[in-house]
Structure formats: C-alpha cells, structure tokens
Amino acid sequence: MDEGKLRTEMRGAAAMLVVGVFALNAHAQEAMWAEAATQPPSQTLRYRPMAHYVRYGGSPSGKFTRAEELSIEHEFAFALKPDVSLSVTVPTTYRTTKGRTGGDATDEDSGIGDITALAKIRWYKDDTGPIDTVRSSIFFGAEIPSGHEQLSSKSVDPIVGVATTWIRKRWGGTFTVGYKMNTNQEEEGLEPGDAKADAFNIDNAVMYRLAPEKFTMESKGAWYLIGEVNGIFETNADHEVMLSPGLMYEGWTWAFEASIQLPILQQVDHRPERRFVVGLGLRFLF
Image (cartoon, rainbow, N blue to C red; front, side):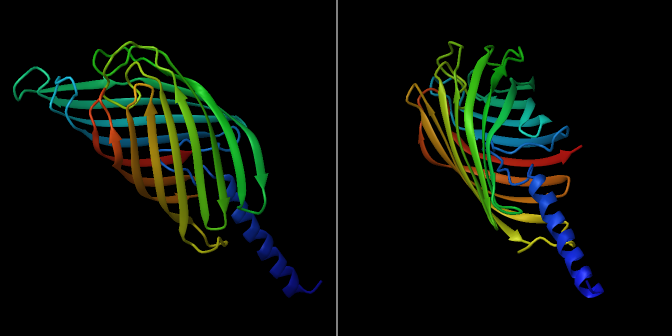
C-alpha cells in the first residue's frame, strides 16, 4: 500500500473515531425537559446543574395572587453498566408568593425541595451508523419529600416511564411517556403533578444540528436547535401543554443548554397557571 493511500485511510479511521466518540457521549442530544433514553458512558459520573425560573398566576383557592420560583437542580447520574444508570436530583429553591397572608404582603421560602431518585435501564438499541441510532429505556423511581414545610409535598410518589431517543444524520429526537402516582392528599398544589391527583407526562422533542454539518477531526463541539412540546395530564382533569424552544452546545465532556417554556394549552383548576418558564443548564462528565 502506498504512503498516500495509507495516510488517507488513517485519517478516515481517525475521523470515524471522532464521530464515534461524539455518538457515545450522547449525554449528548438530550432535550432539557424530556427524559431521554441516553446514558452516561459506563462507570462515568454526569453532573447536571440546571436553573429554572417559573412565573405563576394566582392560586385557584385565593391563597395568593402571584408566585415566582427560582430553583437550582443538581442532578447526579452514574452509569453502572452501558445500559443501566442511577440518578438523583436535588433542587434548592427560592419561592415568593404575593398575598399569601392577605393584602399585598409578599412571603418568601427557601430550602431544599423534593428529591427525585431514578433508575434507568436501556432495553433496546439499534445503531445503524456511526451516529444514527434508536434507543429505548424504561425508568422508575420516586419523588422523595425533603420535609420542608412549604417546599415539600411530604409524600413518597412513585414514578415510572419509557423513553425512546433517535438520531439520524443532523436530526434527533426523544419521545417520553411518564406516570407519577401521588400519595399525598392535598387538593391544591403549586407545580404540575404536585397535588393528590396522579399525573401523566407526554414529551416530544426534536433536535437539529446547526453546526458542524459533518463531524471531523477538527470538531470541538456541536450546536443544536431544539423544539419540544411538553404535556402534563392529571387525573383531576387539569391539563397543560407547553411549547419549549431551546438551544444547546455540546462538547466532548460538557454541554450548555437554554430553553423557554410557553403555554399553548392550559386548563387548570387545582393549581395556578404557569405563565412561562426559563431554563439554563450545564452538563459535565467525570
């Protein structure tokens, strides 16, 4: 084999390796609001801090006229094996409610909110190219009360669901269905799925890689445009559908994401309406 041909083949193999690494690091290609069927690489820890700001309307029962909440969620996910991972999400929350004690008074609460612990098992994987893939996982666990007087639901609420994630060339997406069984007896909650009614989540996300057009040896990362539709349907007949555009940059071992949620369908009688939600997040692999 002549030297030129050998060099060409070596560069091709190296480029394929780069593509493969980006495909494996699909801590990658996860939308912000939908649970994806992806895992951290085996024996790898992923830390994902996320800041969420939510503006609420008034309480249906008249307890308050407006509420705002800023939460910093700390998600830690560890892959025991290539197809099995565990995650824990701990939110630190600052909340203000106007008119809770009557008049125009503003009350403030801060502390640790309810903790979510999940196990995720990938049961299906079909890789049809260096990047192209279809993967499906089941996840299950529970939301565990933190015990905070105002920020905790004070009940252990089981969670189960299934997520399917696909990637084809510059396109990708996730479809997720989840179910949360609430065991508390509160008639009214603040967040969706926070009262005594059970809740179904249906999330659909589509991602498009803006750049690069193709991965090469010089690729340092990739930019993605993300569109999500996130629906929650509760057994007390409350339902809400949010449109969630976003942007993500994904490097070799870290990623940045930003998104906003806007309601396109709302019918809630047991909790305040969410006027809008803003999310910012980072992801790190260790």
